[in-house]
Length: 229
Length: 229
DNA sequence: CAAGATTATTTGACCCTTCAAACATTAGCA
DNA sequence: TGCTAATGTTTGAAGGGTCAAATAATCTTG
Image: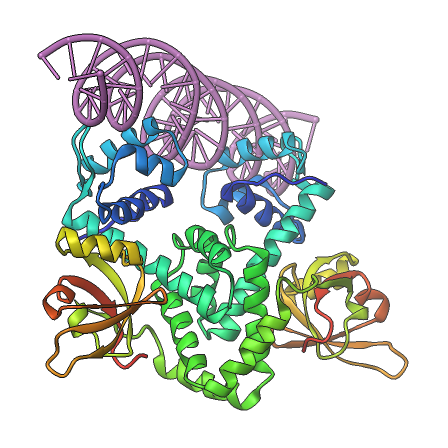
């Protein structure tokens, strides 16, 4: 059974229809529309298209039923949804609501391998009760979101702490050297050590090591979290 | 600075422009097109639209530069990207390639809270060297993807193992009871114990407990992973 | 059973994203 | 400097997804 890549919207329809199929009412236009927050007319169009793609058996004014192929696809999507959901609630300790909305958004792009690894991580954690307890304590202390990272010049990044490069605002010569080393926005960077008088600074990035003057480092904006190695 | 929700595509353009802005060439139409795998004409249109939205300073045949607002948004997106990337590579131990493509897809939907929690989890793991080593061993043993889960009737789900409900194909009466308990596709379910003669079976779902006959349980399809509690 | 209420579909329109092809500008080289 | 190659824009068209309004089918109830 060949399955070409479906759009996120189509996946949403399929998933919703699978869920509603199991209710006594079955999957009806109005209910699908309500579930997906669209107008019934939109659902009519989608149902027609899905039927043409061989994913659905549907005739106007009827009840939508998945074909074997459609059901197979829908179950695969539901599996991604549940995998993420389980990770968010059980492993990350997020609320069902937060978990649900995020899973709905991310389920269309998560790959089987990622899904498998996050499941494995959850299992790993739960199979070490003492550690799992510790983790539960840590994450419940964090409660909501921790304060956002600090932004500063690279010269103010404490040695050993990893930060993310935000921007590089240095002269052409140094810039060229930095770009060759891969120092571009979004890259992780760390200060290895600072010379006694604070100049020069030894920096580590992508496995490369380079040193620069404090004044130069100050021009590189980084974001980092205090207390975090 | 009010920021309305942007489409995934717009976010992609902004992120790409931010990245290219830091190169010597700057962000040019052709380079953006190449990075996003679209035609230059598409980029022209996008650049115009972005400029109208006040996210970009761009005039035809020029170089795209983010406005302060645009840069702020782009950095936020890049932050999500990096956060996910770090989780996939450092915590899940996936390859840079796999991590990159998945991060690109998921970065548009990940919430700040989820991002923060996965960062916290990574930090937690790394702050317990002995556990972290163990976890690295586990995940490298898993290598690629583990074999997919097994599908079976609920009656064949080993006690204590949690499975995902795929479908419920029982009579109206039991079905009503099940639906009231929340036994619908996608829900986690477990068999608590099996009576000596295998009938009835005690089942746990969503904190509820219920018992059913083996024949009924056989009609509930579930997916689960052998050896996993 | 028939009339009104409910539920669905069709139609025509719009926005977003994309492309190919025709056209315009800029850059590089002679 | 001026011509060609490279690069970028405009235009017209298409597909996906959406809506509001008009229309049609189905259901409910007296």
